[in-house]
Image (cartoon, rainbow, N blue to C red):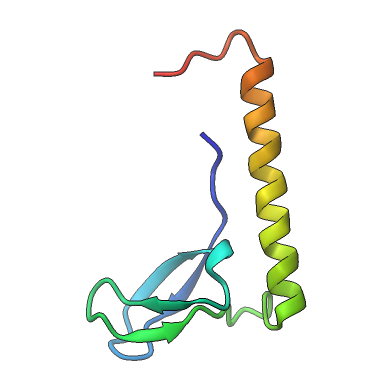
Length: 80
């Protein structure tokens, strides 16, 4: 199974550290702990604007596509 790329963001309501998938950048989210609402933003400097968000989403899609193709080509790979 392809691995996803994540970033960490603190919930603006309760401060809990949340692990968020890159493809959710720019989307409205809710904290699993306090249910506070916020927009997913990577404060590390990546994914700051719409163009970067789109680029990261596309990169994630391509990586998942490559992983899927590799799994289909590898006859020694056994799925459980």
